[in-house]
Image (cartoon, rainbow, N blue to C red; front, side, top):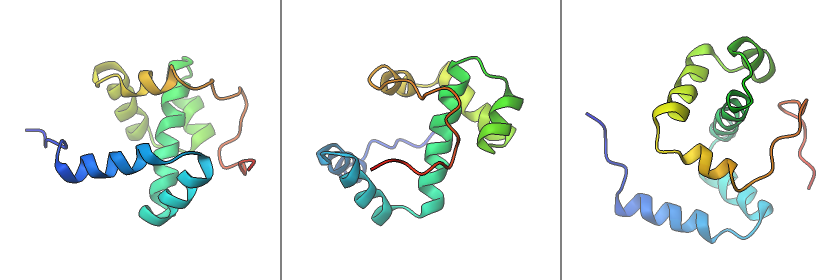
Length: 108
């Protein structure tokens, strides 16, 4: 049995996210609403998804991102059987540059 996330509270949260105008506003919002570890976990999953789409092996992904094989497997299952959310997002942004190291300081 899966839990339905479509609630008024989740709609309200998503409306708040959609109202953000740029990366700096995203940093401010997510640093307030999430712990650092939660943000890093989300970004790790997104990086894992990008690497899986680029046909990287689990070993390469684990080495580069530090993600566990369980996390990589979960992301892979979402890519294959999910609601295509990753693909939608990836279709709207440029690919992550090859060799970009996890944990590098982002340019502001």
